[in-house]
Length: 250
Image 1: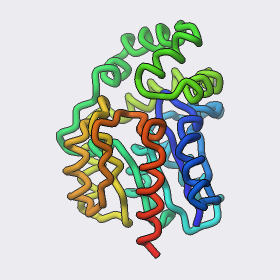
Image 2 (image 1 turned 135 degrees about the vertical axis):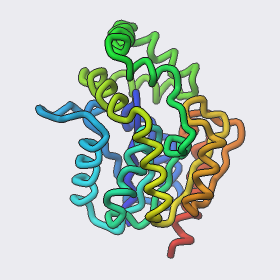
Image 3 (image 1 turned 180 degrees about the vertical axis):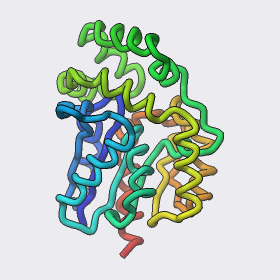
């Protein structure tokens, strides 16, 4: 089995480091991280930057790997996983993802996302973000839940095209796009899944995510009191949950 990990915004694959180490300690070896354009990888010329373009990108990445494939998504990486389940469920054996509230019909984008989605305002916010000194960015990530080592690597590996990709991605995902995606997933059904429920995630409305887990027939791994970067803070428990989930699939 190949386990594929997809991160989100404003991140790089460095966020997975503690979890991948924990999984290797448990005997997992076929672990692959893929970096979405703009988020740890350069934005290709002509890349549209909307959700559909990222689904094309992810489909291509998975088609190039040996299967069966189990995908794990975080933040917008989870959003890409949900989109993949609607368009190309044949590419995966199973999925595990947080932020399931993103595809609940009642989900409302958080304040920063709404700023990015607003013409002119979004450009100003991105300009301000890009003007922050690297050490200040590292400290902010640490305050939000990353380890300093992970935060330092994320800041070091950030691609200059991230800002433009943030604007294009979030504007393409303005509601009702995500709500419609969630309804499609419920109507058509999805492969076996595990919702990774960090109950104090400030960005994903976790209670809505738990409702979506039920609607999708997915199992739930609850991380009580944990925030957005649970893979840094409870990597051992998360690794145990993933190994158990994959083992139950046979």
